[in-house]
Amino acid sequence: MDISVVIPLFNEEESLPELHDWIVKVMDANRYSYEIVFVDDGSKDKSWKIIEGLSAKNKHVRGIKFRRNYGKAAGLNVAFEAALGDVVITMDADLQDSPDEIPELYSMIVNDGFDLVSGWKKKRYDNAFTKNLPSKLYNATTGWISGIKLHDMNCGLKAYRRDVIKSIEVYGEMHRYIPVIAARAGFTNIGEKVVQHQARKYGVSKFGMGRFIRGPLDLLSISFVSKFGKRPMHFFGSIGMLMFTIGFFAALWLGVHKLWIVLYEHGVAERVTASPWFYIALTSMVIGTQLFLAGFLAELIARNSPDRNTYLIEKEIGE
Image (tube, rainbow, N blue to C red):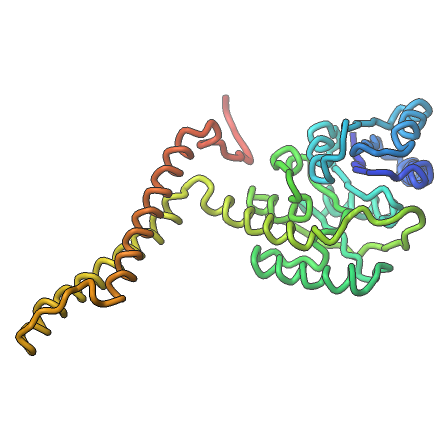
């Protein structure tokens, strides 16, 4: 199969028939073998009934329905597991992503050798204050932290080589950072394509302001886990040893200063505990010890994890 079109959705009954017909028109014009995978994320409207009707008249349509709303990441993850195409293309169900972009996205994967191609909605029809400006800030921050420079990291219109979607897991709010997750997994040939952005025709946006809080937290989680997930001692142990060493030598210097230098100069020894710096040094040693132990325990857990030595193998030869 050439292409799997993956469409997660929530309450999009008005747009589904039009989107389906548009995709079919593009596929037939280019003679692609394809499937359309709709993932109904617990819709309360007639979305699922429409998907069932589309599947009845078009054998290329598949549907997955959740019992409740789990979020876009869960929908993508389940669809990625089910997808059969050599190239997987994701798009939103609200008709703001144009299926006419599919042939060029497909060509960039198959002919140009990209692992992943992300759409860039250079000209947007969203509200400037609630969508456009926050999006630019979000993309700049993500690029700075992850090192992956994309103009529109969260664009729903993306194309993936099959190996990519079969090698990554998407959960929580991680759908915003799939290029980051893919790069951490070794798929670093990531491209970008300017795509047409359509004005919303039906319904309203399903994403609230909470995404501005959850998104940065998920990015930090990806960055930390990808770097230290299998060697936590390198992070906690290093910081713990540094803090303990600073505290120890600070306490040692205070002891020498109070018991020797002051005694030598004034003939009277002062109590080490009389200085507030002693308690700062002691606190540093205690926190350093705790961090070291946290790293040690995390290392024990990581070493006993079933995927401790699970790595992605690109090629093999021989038996």
